[in-house]
Length: 481
Ligand SMILES: Cc1cc2nc3c(=O)[nH]c(=O)nc-3n(C[C@H](O)[C@H](O)[C@H](O)COP(=O)(O)OP(=O)(O)OC[C@H]3O[C@@H](n4cnc5c(N)ncnc54)[C@H](O)[C@@H]3O)c2cc1C
Image (cartoon, rainbow, N blue to C red; front, side, top):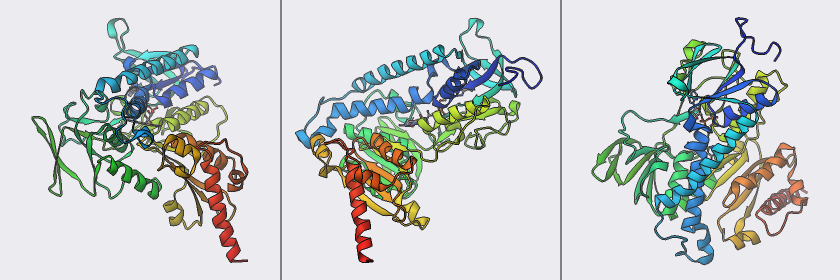
């Protein structure tokens, strides 16, 4: 950055780069710029270091999931019988213990990373006062005064919060959003989940595994419409087996708070009683407090900020990354956006974000995919062959007692490249990266046919699915000989 810290007015600014928000996007932007020798600061509330990701979103929900799987013994029941449990009465304390520990450790790791890289942490909330100046308030510095800091470049990484319809009286006890889940004081016997998006369906599956009778209400006719249909059907089958009831194509008219629970009233007239109602109906960008107009910026009605391919907003020295810019709103993508934005801001050569981004959904069982779906390819009139491997036909699948898992490869019959990889079941979110690597390096199904995989592993499913696709393509070739 030639002429470092000299702002538009010619003044010397306090920092080369100022980051608002310390979630995955902000953190990576700060570290990347610091590694390039820039003077960097990050603003966030003290108790939110690590962002939604560490404190209320990804990490608590994934730690909760792990505790649920362990304590219920759900994954071992195929081997040791349907009554197998590690603990009979699972309490919120059992579930929460691990979560607090992991959040604490993750926060320490982030604080230490920022400190090691000499990134200044400014505790509080930031708002623009000028295009190059931010007022930070709410910190615990002596007198708690507002502090004005200036920077050459600014990265907005303020994330999102759960959207709350005005018509619903949230009480943080019975009627909650996804932030409230981790503060529940008991495991409810019955629960309504409004919204079958990723967050809603992940929590629905965790509570169903705990024995809660869950009803999912979704306005659309299907859920997770960006995923492979066959895999979503398999997930629905599993969740129904755990006593989940789905109400698709239904809209909530109101939620009535009762003495010991709430009744969710649907527009169709159905009334669903439950101990707890969890709303998971989208998220709103955290831009209300930013005073964007002072920087010459604006957000859309969902609080999101528009950016170009370099994550630059309409004001070229201000960047925005992570959930505040919208889809795909994942921690991994946010991190990469942060790194790329910082490199661009520091004048480093940057490549575009790689198109091939994996999606991981931590339902029980989990789903992961990379590349295109069958529906997507069919709509685009792109021919494909399907190769499938079922865990129950793999030695590792039998050993771990996963009889439902599957891996599906979509292969181009023209050049045999992989078009998509879809995995359902144990380890799906890890396994998908093998396919992602082959696809990213332009490999074909032949590589998977010829590769030798450790035995017995779930990774072997790649070879089995590749052979399946290859046999189908060979059959086609034979018919036309
Ligand atoms: C329940 C749940 C489960 C999830 N599970 C997964 C998952 O399994 N995998 C996955 O990849 N993603 C998951 N996500 C999404 C993931 O958490 C987000 O994509 C990621 O956290 C977004 O990162 P971010 O950089 O945008 O910042 P965020 O993590 O959203 O953090 C933003 C930070 O900005 C701060 N901030 C806000 N306003 C200001 C201001 N004015 N000044 C200073 N600081 C401010 C906030 O305090 C917050 O700390 C989940 C989300 C939720 C809610």
